[in-house]
Amino acid sequence: MKYIRIFVSLLFCCSTAAAQDQTPKLCADMPVYSLLDFWVGEWDVYSGEEKVGENRIHKILNGCAVMEHWTAADGGEGKSLFYVDAEGV
Image (cartoon, rainbow, N blue to C red; front, top):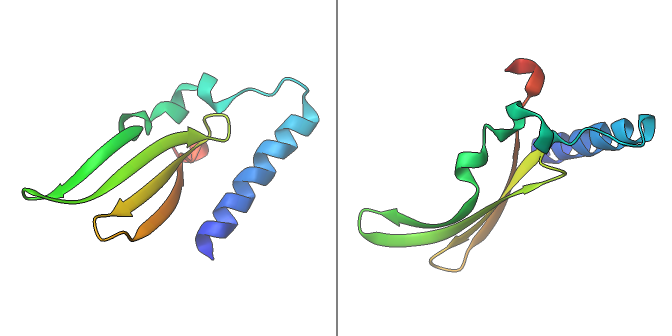
């Protein structure tokens, strides 16, 4: 449930900013939100020489967050949402 609350809070934050200003600043335009850019892309994941899965990472919510899509070699799946707490940096 913690992840759902974070996601809902992030959506509320972004929608509130948009309501106040017709031209909201995009997170992509603020350098602090590029801290997770190193992870963006498609990755084969290995444990030693054995491929254990694939990871696809992309930016969402106007660059405010990063979404991870994990697929394990056995077919299992998972998703995660990450964002930078700009006030804490």
